[in-house]
Image 1 (cartoon, rainbow, N blue to C red):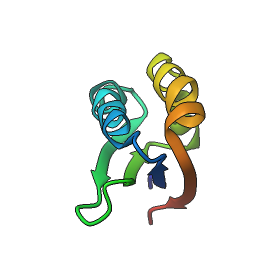
Image 2: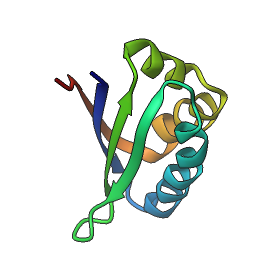
Image 3: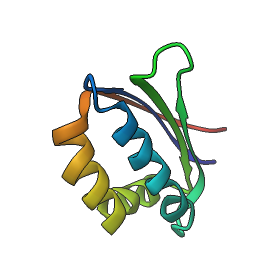
Length: 96
């Protein structure tokens, strides 16, 4: 079983390219986390402001460790949420 996070991010107008950079910067360190099983950011080809993140963790604690990581704190909490995002939605699932 895996803990799954499905997130949609909408960039503020004019902030799309920096948000894409943040997504790229987050990928390798997120994939290297011990609790991570899968991490992939996507960008809509029809709406460049729309991003989708699909993530799998060994359990909810693995996801919490991700949110407490240095790269998440610096790039998402420190930059993306306050400066780059117009909207942020998250849903959580478990595989079976």
